[in-house]
Image 1 (cartoon, helix red, strand yellow):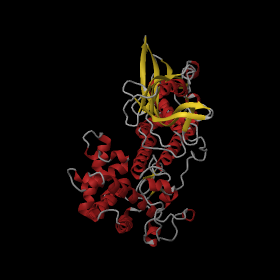
Image 2 (cartoon, rainbow, N blue to C red; image 1 turned 180 degrees about the horizontal axis):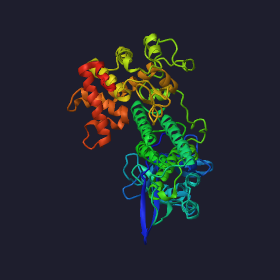
Image 3 (spheres, rainbow, N blue to C red; image 1 turned 180 degrees about the vertical axis):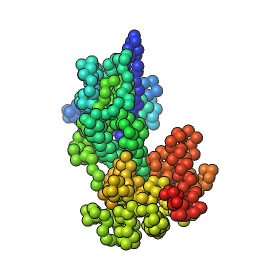
Length: 605
């Protein structure tokens, strides 16, 4: 049964003297489908989804309910409306005299409350109505009213929704994530309890609360401290665990999703990976940047889970609600009590993943760099990159890279460029050779037809200018006499500076390093994705500046991720990013005016 879920997160801050104590409340919003499931399991237990509440043994007097429907009322009650099939008469000598049948609906208005055990939600019948099929109240036999009070009220009032497992799961997750002793001794885990419940418009809103220890008056966040070797190792392990978890979660949600939702999920994952790329690019990472990475991504993903747009096959509504509330609890507690030192590591993410899918394995959450056809499809690419026709030796590791060919390119040209770091007197020949390679990639893309012909020149200049901006048309550099693949501190590789962390699972990382043609093809594929699926689809060419805006927007996304698409025209864009966009725009216009010759200026000639 499909369900819709909604969860709202809020914190209530209560001030006590000079210290700050936080009572954190995380509502768990259960779709009314979960209430219907509880009714089906506990009351409407017969195979056809009905229940016989009374029968005199002669089938003369009997009462049956079926088809429960759940909603809320304007005055704060839960309405449970079911169909009623009643028979009554006088049994005499095995016969039923003057039998009468009556059908209609019964509506009970129920108050919802947290049970005394603090681990379940109960229901108390406050009023009831019998309604005819015409939805108008009408006189009914007094016997039906008597049966209603004697049989219907007690059965419906006996329904409970057990949340003990949810509480235990949350305690286990928070216990694993929290590092400070006060998290356990001071009451975060022991204070975890159901606080209240009320019927919402579409969901049953249950308030889960727990206490956060006082914020020490002298506490300051750790900023700028140089990480020790152990801390750096922990940071590397943590970001890999985060990236693996985020990738697994998005893939799981995207597999059953419709194309529009899958595209939105793919964009969230890309932005998450660009955020990771930015964190890795910092000279000195903060002690635990994964906390920030988790927060930014969860804030984008959570609304899609809360409003019911996403579902997971085989996962019931309560499991999904538990998962959402658990992630919200991590998010909120880390926000209001940062001094607790929430630990976002492999154990935390493993426990969180198992709340929604208990069978998830270590391998499922492992950091894997191999090409994943599903990820390629999710990002709008073909499941596999087209194999080309170039042959020959592709660097010292070429024999290790089957299928590493890029778009069709001249084999001799690729071989010539492999490992070539040009001397000054070779620059003309080198740049002409790279230009031929790039033009072959552009021509192959033109044959595919994804870029509308009206924007073919935009695509060509975009490709040439991006390769210029990213690498000065270099795949390799000479470092202390050793030829190496050009690589940025944050892991961007080769001619097109394709980042190995952003595009993990989408491209063969060894091929990006060793094969200039593959690198060019990968960079072009990403540019075309942003050019057509983002810039053109979202009408950047309709902005002042016309078609050239498509190139500016596509490059901004190439550099910073999908959410940077319009930064080139945003007056609030920071100075650093604005300078990057300005440099690209200068190169793009130079390419348009001079062609490939413009790149000579990158080498001072």
